[in-house]
Length: 136
Image 1 (tube, one colour):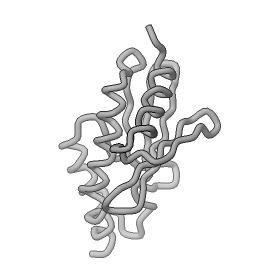
Image 2: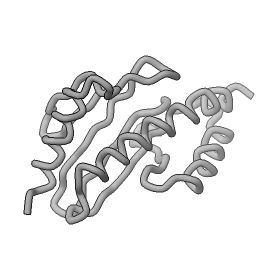
Image 3: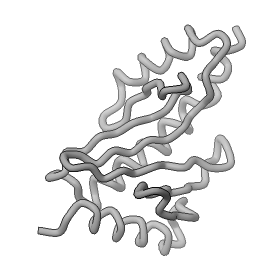
């Protein structure tokens, strides 16, 4: 059985080398994999993948901590109800991020592509609305 790290490395190489992919750059930083993809709603999004002992996580920064977060947080919780693999969360600085966690035994190239696509789509759908909610 191929390990999750090897599957992730191969998937990233495939994304970067596919001219139809929105992934334009990837690197390893302190043991985490950074994948940068073009977006329509904003210039780009970086997705950080971390392979752990029991799961693989993906995280993407969406917006910074807000002055008036109530509306944006409410919208994020509503979006969480509709999502499948990816959910909004607050990071340690109270910025809004998207997170996904895959059990290590379920990591496949297909599942990783689904996670990346859902992050892309969720940002496309939510980004402007979340910013608008900060300025009622």
